Image (cartoon, rainbow, N blue to C red; front, side):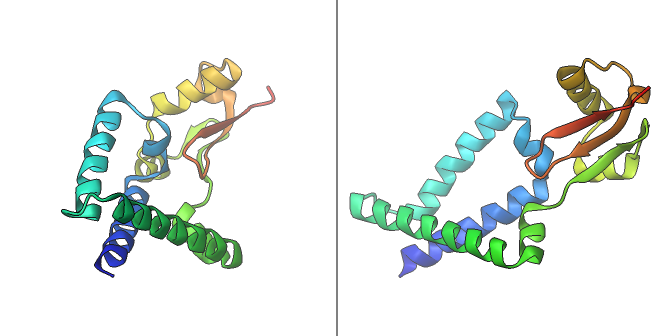
Length: 148
């Protein structure tokens, strides 16, 4: 029973932690982020399994974590408020060429991130060429070019 509670607690903690970090930080993984995720993974493994590294314990834990994930998927499908809380909503960062600085700060996105997305997706080089820049739920930045 301790294993199940430990697994659920770690799952919820990491879900909350990555929600606080923001969507954009999950989509743009740097070398530093990758190393940090490896360390978090190792620490999480030790916290989840404790001193019992048996195959049975690992399989039970994997089953518990997958079960929790399946429950969240069903709940998010049924309750849209929960879905918005856990996954967020798209966030407009640029409106008709004007950066919305408050939203950008909230989302931990800077002008260079937006211009990079504009260059990669549409070959745009300047902010005034962007009608809308939207931080999507998955952390990617979508660009809608200005028509002029």
